[in-house]
Image: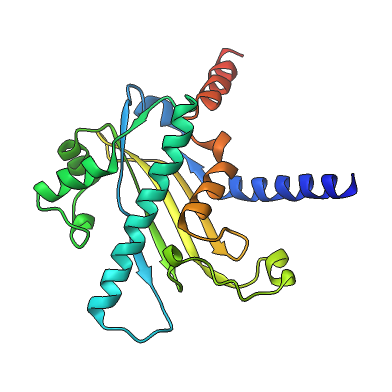
Length: 220
């Protein structure tokens, strides 16, 4: 019983911490009115590795990590979409990447395009994008050579991830979630994204339950 209570408070503490790192625009309802489909972009990655690699190899690894997060987010959203958790759909990332490629938009130059330009090209209502700063290859998994104390305390910072949603018409930021990546975050990209998004589930702006709560609040 004591352990159950302990873990309950631990999870609550982690959840509250996650919510502190979340921003939502005060104009979200107005700007997102009519949103039906969002596109998930490969994340822009900055790697600071101990290994000595060529610039070409480093660029390749950064691209690999960026696409791994894109894939992990699609997996997370797809699972919850089956349960009808969201009020929007998410464009298949294979279609997203194919359309980008047809328009000569690559991982190397995607950052020069505006949110509005990308939304128009992809024919979506909004863009999910983000940044990833790492000192390990997250897609290869978190190092497992650590003590229980390290795990409990969350020592060994491996970087930081930021997820943001922007309106396709105005290009304005609607929602942003940032989180530090450490030994407690998860064992690999999919695990980390899954845990991260679950902690922020009720704060995700397109969550059906959150929208119901918002409407109730307005009626009061």
